[in-house]
View 1: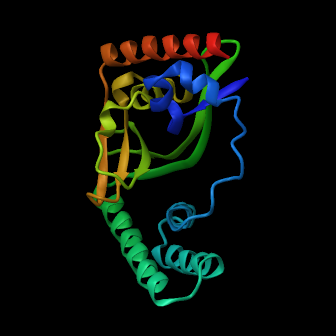
View 2: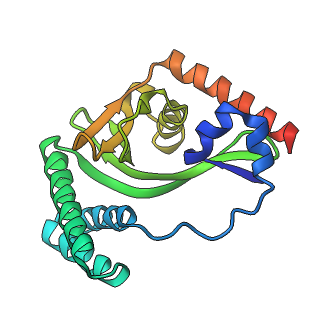
Length: 208
């Protein structure tokens, strides 16, 4: 079954026929390990080690030294990433969020040929007793307009936890704004997103 990843959904949304054709083209090598990836691993380590920032920083430094050349440019970037890690943990604590799990893999069948799938980077419990799902963002973009977010909110509410839609928030941790940003979509917004997603899946399937 062909997969539309969360990161690919906006491309499929813009031109599903063209996107379907791209699925037949070999993707090539795996993405190169980046400093951003190393930072995300350190965030996960922070949560796995029950909020121990020192262990997370040490883990990041070791990962960084193992994968990137030791020069003045990289050292400066390493220090910036450590600052971003500290800022992330500060905002997490300030918001009184409780870590539940990370890199939760989900799949949503669209047709017999196509599915939507990927990982939910972080799932946390918020102060209202509900669930907050966060992706990481390095861009100053209108993430609320992306189709994946209401779809994920509905899946988390109905399939993962069996709670009301209003008990789930979705959003990003923004490295631009240095804070968690989230939204809970309405039932109508979620229903409209679901219809659009199914339509995209059908067009992609027909074009395969």
